[in-house]
Length: 121
Image 1 (cartoon, one colour):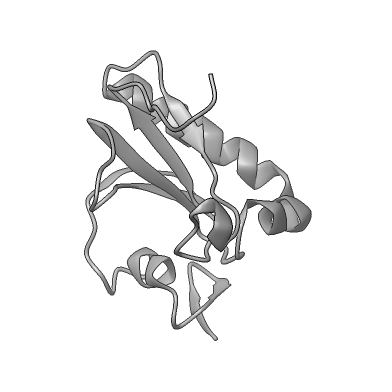
Image 2 (tube, rainbow, N blue to C red):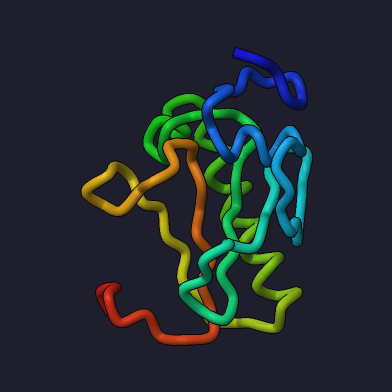
């Protein structure tokens, strides 16, 4: 394990590498404990990932470790949506491979600008 911003990170994790600025990203927002970056494969006109600095494998693990981080992530997503001019948006946590999670570092998808047909109404 190595450190970024004083928090243990996973050396194999792409999001930890983005947080450590070892891999470039288009950052659109940051706080002391989160960053928001544009998704490299957007599924909507606005598709941003909100990523906490602390490495946890999924939202459930983050909630156990520090439930306040989830509220901070939602707040960051709302700030990005407002800055981008969207009042209506989706927030999605994928937890586990069967749910579509491919990077096992907690992250929140902010999607706006189109109705997502695969989500329940």
